[in-house]
Image (tube, rainbow, N blue to C red; front, side):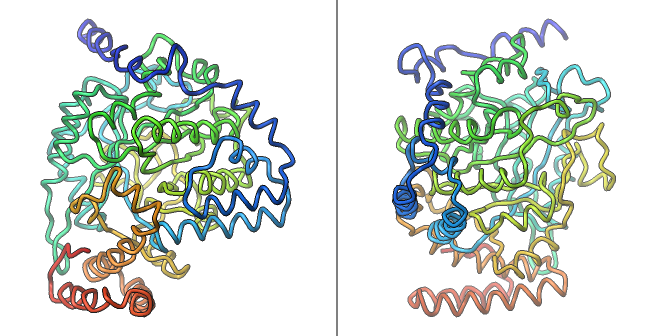
Length: 495
């Protein structure tokens, strides 16, 4: 078994699938240049800051210098103005909808030994497990049939037990599950994937099976820190294999890719710049940037003392600024806020440009169908901060004026990849977002909502209908028709 595992590891990295994308011998993250930009743009001029605000409102990607100015912004009045700009950008690009999803962890075997991760190879207290096909069905039945999720982020470790064959088969199983619910049926319509860096041919296979967004986080863009927390004798120790995995995905014609950094490993200012440089690189090479950006903070994990030793823990105030700067720097992208954060933080930053968040979250292997409720560290990668159910979150969001969207229409209509990027930049996609948010929200209220949530949600739909009638009168008649058909039992109607 050990020889087989070593053989699998030895054949994972293809150097030609790194160097083909490089301009010379250096990768696109220049540590010295990033720090130089941050240092050179201290005390930015207020006039220049407002010019940057205007540029972001035009949904244009900011330059490194412009982003560094926002990182260094100290003026309290301009900072408050930046919050207003962030919300305007979000409403222009995505309207007032929030997309919800759930993470589904498929296994906790891993060949890597990342110092901050509970699933690392040398952590002997973790109860290792990989879901079988029957277990995947049971987990999906709970998620789609009891909770009401339509989207998942399916999470895989880097190990031959969860290789591309397993990923492909598990996605087919997830999409195959269809569960009778209150008035219709529950089914996962989009499965995004968070996995290790894959090879181009493997990514083509996932494209064929219907992968949603392919999500890989660099963890830290700082070369020395990356080397320190990812032992060099492991697959993940290869910085560039991970850095260029989004290039491979786009070459494999995976329409949407998601990037992220694990904040707390290194200075947050550097990581924000790294995410921007990554977006600029993808725009330069492929004409489109990341579909989503994520910004998780380090959380406690079983038998993982590194987390307590980090010098770069991110305060709540800095976390807020991270979100603000990214919202302006990469204005077209979706921004994912997860249940790692406690309720009070999620409520506080939701208005800063968040577009996606999770609910009813369980990150233990088999946790949804096993029904355990305690946070058992030996069964999961880290602790979550917000245990709210999907029903509770939807009700809270509705009270704040946000409509929960379960829309996956764009992926059936071809509004993906460069197409959706163009629509996002033009502010056109937001119109589809509003219409499809209303129809899918109505579906969910009929099929899953508690009485209190249904009452608050239906009141919000009436408010949204009045806005559509005023701003999109041509679409109003068809929207009303769709809602009647949904009330009569039809499902998955979209614009």
